[in-house]
Structures are given as C-alpha cells and as structure tokens.
Image 1 (cartoon, rainbow, N blue to C red):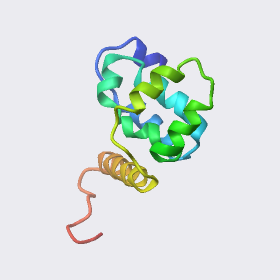
Image 2 (image 1 turned 135 degrees about the vertical axis):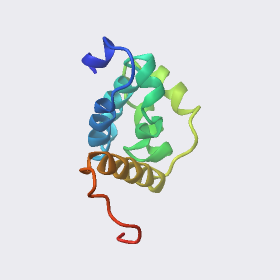
Image 3 (image 1 turned 90 degrees about the vertical axis):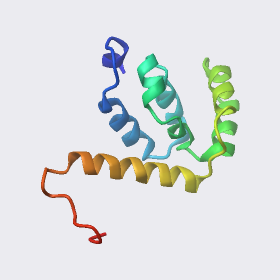
Image 4 (image 1 turned 90 degrees about the horizontal axis):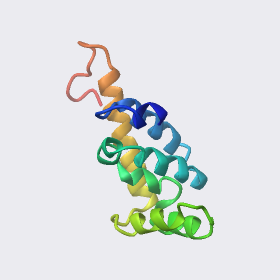
Length: 118
C-alpha cells in the first residue's frame, strides 16, 4: 500500500496481495482491504470492491463493521451499503475468478491448457 500511495497507475501487485488476504476470509481483514482500496484513485478504480465482503458476505460484514468502533466505520459502512448484496457464495466465486485470472497471467507462455482440459 505504501508503494501505491506514491505512484501513478495500477499495479496488479496490490490486487494479488489483497486477494491473498481475502482468501483467509477473516472479518477483521476488512480494514486492510479498505485501506488497500482507498490508497489512491487508481487502487479505488482497480481493486474489486467485492473483496470487502470476504469475511462473510454483506450481512455478516456490515454487522462486523457496525460493532467494530473503528475510526473508518462510517466511511466504510456508507460504501458497503452502496455495493450490490453479496453472499458467501458470491465471494467464493469472485475469489475463484480472480485466482484463475492470476494463474493464467503467471502461466508460462505456451503452457496454457488446451480447450477442454478443465
């Protein structure tokens, strides 16, 4: 996040880090994810905001934030309420989709699976 505060543009390194954090599915990690998203204009535009629901979907995430007393509680709650509802299954789908994206990006050229290889 420090790097992204002082640079222009979006580097996928911050999304890869946010994805790794979101994979743990811990409600308390929402503050780090929120910090990553709000680091800069570019991270705001580039990071999937659905990662904020990694700790339990919309209902559990909002309940966690409401009970947190965190200094960013009101800002985050306002934003969460603007996002589309997300269930645990929606979060699982988002994480899997982003994981596949990075697996494809990191695959060596010429080693992509053939269609139908699953």
